Length: 554
Image (cartoon, rainbow, N blue to C red; front, side, top):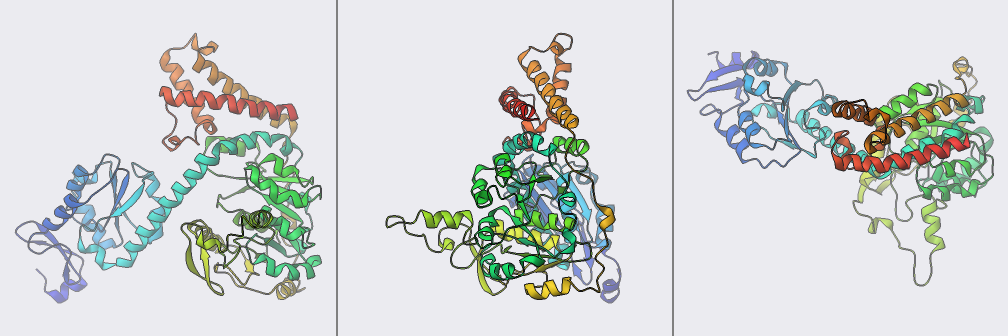
């Protein structure tokens, strides 16, 4: 055996302790030098592992404790073993028993960065997991503790975000599908953003969110109105309109009825609207202006892929959960390619007082309903659950898990593209802050080229009448065929075996996944169980009615 000085400079060494092999590297044993397997096995057997848990095992090395863990944990659990060191990974690759390595509930990877863990967990058997439990079964994790701590945090955050998105889809997914069909007639009359605003890139584009800091910036925005292209999120519209600021474009993403209250201030104003196909049709029509459409890919669905094939020019945005973040994406696609996008009112937090700008629907409604018997509730931070104090741009601010998650998404998104923050309040988003007057002066600097990108204008995004009609009628026929098979009224049931009928039902369910994706068990995929098909049968009628309504308006 090499002396200690040499072992510090060589690769990891296998050491026979008399009770099994241990691993020595960089002057330390990564298992016990007396009984290497004892502690890992005991740790595995004493662990409390609930169903649907992903067990994260840093630096698996020789795999001690893994077999016991696989035998003891519920069938819905899996092990993810991660290694940062190439040298230690070579030990695992050559020494890990085949009974562990070949188990479908065990996966092992070497990563260069903790963030790479996010690219592999959805392929692990058992995903989506409810939680991630870390178990250190070797001393290898202590060689790079920050690496494994960050990997664990990234996986936790990914699972949390996945389930938040899942709960949103359960609550709103049915309405998303309905609104896509109901918006088809309006899509026929729509135009592209570039067609609506051919000169938009000649001015700085300013995205206005509905955060509390918007109120402070309204006088500056009004003073420089002629020099700006203002893209307002739906909830910011009342604050802008009542201050004498008419936005150039309003973004509407919300699929629910309550959003219409935000747009009443712009009723019959003729302001153009950029609407998501999933947005509430009634809200899109309130301003009575021209419309453009986009599509937020809110889930990995065959239906949305089919939409993209049918309407390839329809702009698509990442599903970031926040209308403000989608507005930034839209602004970036419309803005001059060599110029920054300005934004304000994207605070993702608040101080004492309102959580939104003063004229946004929620604060305005609270003031209207104030009386002797129902006084204003005071600081919302005292009433909301999950609220915490965070470091803001100017001292402490209040935020909650949803808003702080949006802020983190904003930081990631703004790493690519050029943005400038006009707001002096809210959570820091990792981009430079600037005063509006200076931002306009720098943007208008004649030394910068302003013609770039004009040749890349896209064509009109509205669908042809025949294409929309064909799309809707094809969906209707498919749903009617499925209904016929389920009720025994289809001609297909006369000439096919039960096995062929089942395959046909699964084929349609996979294609028309808007029928069931929002079910509580929808993440598991379609099923031929009677209870599942009974629920699908109800959804067929719901969506057929939506399609018939859209066809009548073409």
